[in-house]
Amino acid sequence: MSVWQYGLTVEWVITPKNTMHPEKQQSPMKNIILIGMPGAGKSTVGVILAKMLGMTFVDTDIAIQERAGRLLQEIINMDGPDAFLAIEEKTILSLHYHHCVIATGGSVVFSKTAMDWLKQDSVIVYLKISCEDMIKRLRNITTRGVVLIPGQSLPAMYHQRVPLYEQYADITIDCADEDFEEVVGKVIRELAVKKF
Image (cartoon, rainbow, N blue to C red; front, side, top):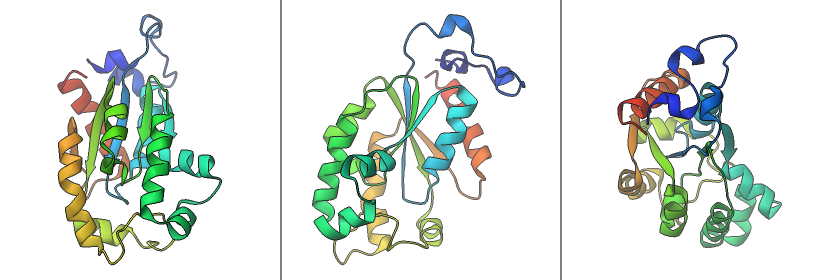
């Protein structure tokens, strides 16, 4: 699949009108699922990517908060990590989107059921950052809604999750020292090269 099949060419992306190709609006397009560590920039990259490709954008962390009526951190603090993961899985399974960029929470990969659901008619993009970069970016760890096993350190969480991200990824994007627009450009190029 080329970038044409997401409704745009690279040339169209940079034109002011940003017009969708009419022949490509007839059938549902693949979703683009963003996975990766907390702080990798999934939500920010997702918004820009959706704008560039003329797609819808969904942030599953926001969907979880809407479903539960509470902040992510409140769910974790009051109900515990296992209850949070159960709510996250149910929220993911309730999603029914086409031609959509979906930014997931970092813990989504703990649920095979959720990942199998997301992977249907979708391409999974892993936004990869180093452990050092993750720690630097997570300044609000006590309020951000990051799922940690009691007593688990951030490096331990990082090394626990990396193999799961690698397992599910169709495309891996190295985000080291890149700004968000450069990351989006990398994603678009990889989608074209790998014909998604």
